[in-house]
Length: 207
Image (tube, rainbow, N blue to C red; front, side, top):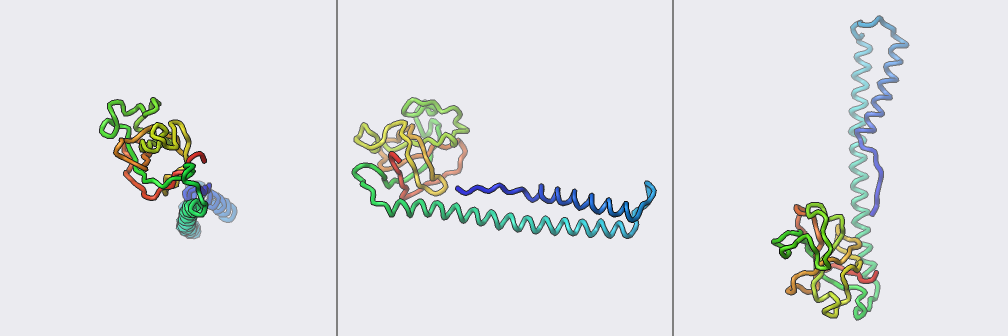
């Protein structure tokens, strides 16, 4: 994915404001020295108003530029996902070797309602450290027809590559789905993650 280190508009404006205020203040003191406590002159007030207008307009411009950059980055990420999918489609995989499979994908929470009575223990007996914060583990469950004990190409602990929109990336197979499912994977997600699903997902094995 494309990454960009962009200063926030508030930081840029703050630095710009500090610079401008310092410059104007020094200029005013140099050109119009006045005893401490004097009421600001009309000239000083006009300068302050002008400076405020410059800072305000600069912030608006920076926000506009930042929005444009964010939109460009989003487009680049979409193109990246699209290019990954196109590259995979262009390769003539040997399906008998299990190089790639087309599956559907959903997500699940490690809770009793969606698992067994030990939802924090995966099928390969790995313990999930925190069910409320586990999405970053990048673990998946696969349907049992894809596992080795059913003559499938996958074993627990295997790392596979999944092409599925915003979930594209490498994952470790830690869990198994109910027997009624076939050619399907489930992303392990932290409790509370918004629901999603994908069709025509590319599952690359031994990549």
